[in-house]
Image (cartoon, rainbow, N blue to C red; front, side):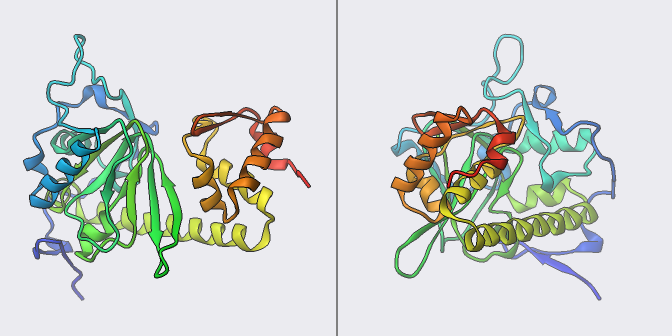
Length: 296
């Protein structure tokens, strides 16, 4: 039996014939310094076409900037936008030189303000690797209700499933403020990532998403509103990155409750010195207490 991948341009790639040797290697640490990578190439090198141009114009119209990393180095030769990026799950197992070669051909997009990068029901010409910031993944149902399905963090990729399948986007993706993305097309990925590595990583990503969806379904069904809010705050942060940039309205949508309930719950948590609240952000001060707290 032959497994064939068809990309969004209609190219057919038998897995056994995909270019590149199979290389299995895990990085000793979860971060790949981008200061060792060469500048990103122009957008055309990662397959951006008319849709990509429309996306750039739409971002420019909202005050955001999209540009390649060329010319974005400071006097010491380091990237100004970021110094390191969590190792992407889609690229796990790649040798360091091959990974740096892939990253160097991606296009860098800086979004100081919130910008839509993928729209539900439309075709994805590129996938996006989050280098810094967050990307909100949302779904609109037939009645027009907007559901926040996920807040993607650095190292995650959005749009790769639609890129490989050629099917319309299952959800919309919008950057949160101060986000940096690396975009790439299917051809670029197939040229740099060995077939066996890509297939294994995609399977792992799908497994992680199923696990996340099952956990969120359990939270939605079996926990009261205040506990759902606490659990989502834990899911949106890590011990190494304790702050999440999310507004109360979005947290209410994610938790399936009202904004008033979110406001009341956050006020209680702040009074207990468990969290700190700022404009559009929540910072976890005591993760252990947030995991165990019972507000009712």
